[in-house]
Length: 496
Ligand code: NAI
Ligand code: MG
Image (tube, rainbow, N blue to C red):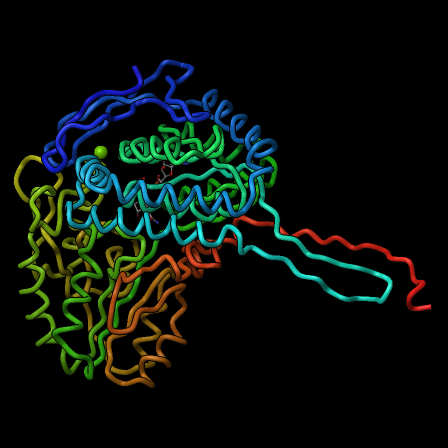
């Protein structure tokens, strides 16, 4: 059996594939293994699904290789674009089901899940538009030579995604890879495999040839590691923890030197100057840390406020955080649902204990909500010092730290005081401050008077240990193409 009927409070009954999606078919794993998928809202088992092991990775890679060497290589760029646009249309057509499955499996609020589906469709359609605009160059060197430079696909791309934005990461990875003419073996996170399989049905419906996009469910140490060290995978793209990012790079180095791009963690500073519009700053600081339950690689987890407005800011920020609606992801009003898993819940509670022990003060939150499901109160720590673990390490939950600064120079110095460099924000009404501080912060994205406002047209990725390469925008196509130089010696009669 490779599909079952499930039900969500938002979209009613739907057909949930449970197999591995290889060669446009849902199949069981070769070793016959399955694993349970947990609902983080009530800790119940949603269903069991088929697990990929090394043997299934081999099958998926060979399907992707065959498609790459065969039908996909012959497909016109126009048609690659057409297929991606069709897939985007199907995401919109099935938006209710996709969003509901995302909320069921991940625990994110249904209103946020709908936003993710819309952004996934936007991203797929955007890369559909790029497919026939990937162009080369002609370069003159000497009169008797004709040189052209081509952008070619890399080949079979292994893609390993996390659980915090299952559908969005699916689209960020598949869009540019497929637009550029590659084929894909994508492994979802073991915590959230369901929406990707529903989306896999749409791949077939859109009309992609078999083997172009393969979606497998499985564990990092088994299926993920098999992708990273596979001798016939030409490139690996990974989003997740820095620890695993390092392992992926080592696996690539120790196997076939496949190309590597990494989107890793962050500990992003959110800096508020005294001349900022305070109500606006508070709502973006609140959204910066608590959006998606703090499970964002770019979460604004370190809040720095200029000292003259610090007391006023903290009072209002506390009041704002306490108003965030935490609860059942299927209530339309809910802003924050449960954390994704018991493991993540325990990690976050561990950080909260650690902060308390280190002498930080809990301004609000700090506790579990209820006794079923992985709900945590929006939490603010003050009285922190820069060396504390809660200030240095990624917590990946609804927990931020807040402290004061005096000058612009100090704000930049503490803002950059981390091994990460994914994102940052500045809140100010002074244009010079906005630009000077944005330019001085070592981060891949800087937001001014806003936060988390990602867009598929804008590149996203990390400085320092936050990653290698960029996703989204034209920049992502760099990760999925390689440059070929063709140099032709001409006769020299015309120039004789
Ligand atoms: P993780 O890095 O273990 O998992 C992310 C993905 O990598 C999953 O698909 C997983 O199966 C896979 N994976 C795990 N080990 C692997 C290996 N050895 N080889 C190949 N693939 C492997 O992250 P995890 O444990 O779920 O979360 C831990 C922390 O990582 C979080 O608390 C957060 O700090 C960070 N994280 C960052 C994300 C981001 O968006 N940058 C997303 C998820 C987690
Ligand atoms: Mg789950």
